[in-house]
Amino acid sequence: MAKILEAHNRLFKNIFVCKNCSAKIRASPIKILEGKVKCRKCKKRAFRPLRKK
Image (cartoon, rainbow, N blue to C red):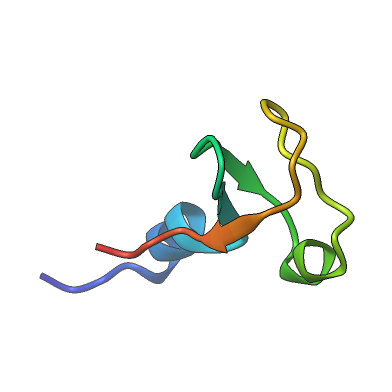
């Protein structure tokens, strides 16, 4: 099946997962690297990119 670019961007672009509580956050990668984004649940600043299956 062909991949639809719009759907791929909506599902995976700018989405990060908290390493502590696994909450999903949508934010700019630059802000994640600078440490400006906090998790809504646990207030930590450790994130990883969403894993593509």
